Length: 270
Image 1 (spheres, rainbow, N blue to C red):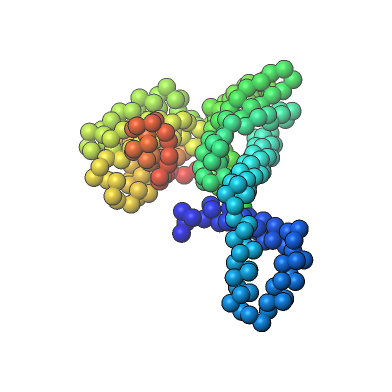
Image 2: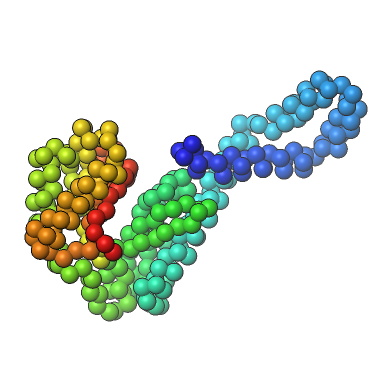
């Protein structure tokens, strides 16, 4: 049922429009007269109602309604995310920056997590940064920008940006790669890739090995995150706040290099 949740608004929208079309039909008065005249014949009444209702389901009209719904929801989602990004800039105390165009998936309305390539400008200076979006239109959006992307926005403002994690990325990367390669050799995962860093710490994409794909994805991801966090903070004495492991769909990632997160695990505190 959770997989069908994004389509509930679509179904409600189509049914609502069909009802409006039925009520506002130009021959509604004639149809009502005919329905009253045949009120004594229940079978005939049902037949007439069925004909009138099914007459609304033309292929052209259904396609038109679906296209209209997708267009309206995309624009609504687009504007809502722009507003959330403006709020994010205020939260980060970045003033005078205008939020420009967004590049996001056409299926954004039906997805709960994706990246929006966002334009920012101040005077004649412009830049683009990736904004992480989660949530849905009817439940509210949660937008997040990594510190690497935030540094791009700060650059057009003209002020230096200091990353808040304490260990330099140049030191963290080889330590992470060394530990994750060990996990690959132990057959826990098939592939991994360091996605980004922010003030939490590293975000790592992983493809689980065949033996782990049937297990609880979140539990496996949490186990990997805990082992990496322990290795970085206790074994190597490095300073990170949190480790985030994102488990991606193996088929899409391997064949098309598409990142579809199917589960995640975290370790540490933030």
